[in-house]
Length: 84
Image (cartoon, rainbow, N blue to C red):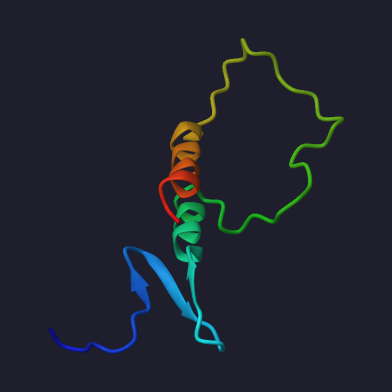
């Protein structure tokens, strides 16, 4: 076994050394990858993404939106439950 220097990433998790010798695990890169995959990397955080006066279209409308909702929820659920 050889010393390869300081470890920065393990299994996609970033390791950050603190000034007091502590090590913090950060998943910013994974979150950024999720946001890019669903084209939300340029979005700005807001309290409520929908104006309360917005009128919604009826469910029988012919317009369909390609929104991979289930895939996005699955990626976020994986982040919350299967990673530390």
